[in-house]
Image (cartoon, rainbow, N blue to C red; front, side, top):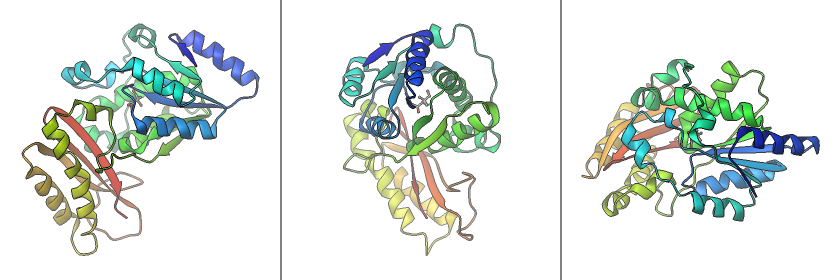
Length: 282
Ligand code: PAF
């Protein structure tokens, strides 16, 4: 496994691979890797000859300084996990490598900026777009693998490529969320949970499933109220939003008419840790 710190070194390695007609799969991460990330690596390996994983805690996507400061960093463990997973190249740049000067580009994603994560984390998606566009340009992978736990991020990245990077050939592959045995969606932030909040956190997915079971008999509003109120009853959990949305457009639905797919998306504050989750409802 090669560990590289500069875009130049990475491009050289990838040029060599491409000269040998090898396809490139890319998994962008912010480190603190868990089994969910490894499943992305496994899918990248199955669909590409060379797998590149980036580890970079991207400051521009944090709208909260405390969140950036406390974001878990476990580089040694990450490298061991990636080696064991058969990853060939790890890109671990320093901040100056990715942002040699301030990146003042503005990205906008229409209504996606105004709902759910867009509404609650101002500037977040613009920051994600800044780093993903830089990484995509450097790596120019055949495929890039993203976890569906960040459901809205997947939609944003697809729009980024379609609207801002039409020259890039990278295909976005969305991969299923992995869960802990008790149902909690895997996330790097889970390791920041206290004993109490970790115990409470599975209530999120559990209650979303209960909400899904009401689909045939209850209105959208009634299910949204049921899920939010049930979760908020736990003293360690506070729902920031719970939205039932069209799975393709991510726009909130008013009712269950039509035959489009429907998903439910949630953000919950668990003590100091902000958790998100989503699942298909129909
Ligand atoms: O999903 C993440 O971990 C990050 O948002 C990403 C895509 C690596 C960009 O920093």
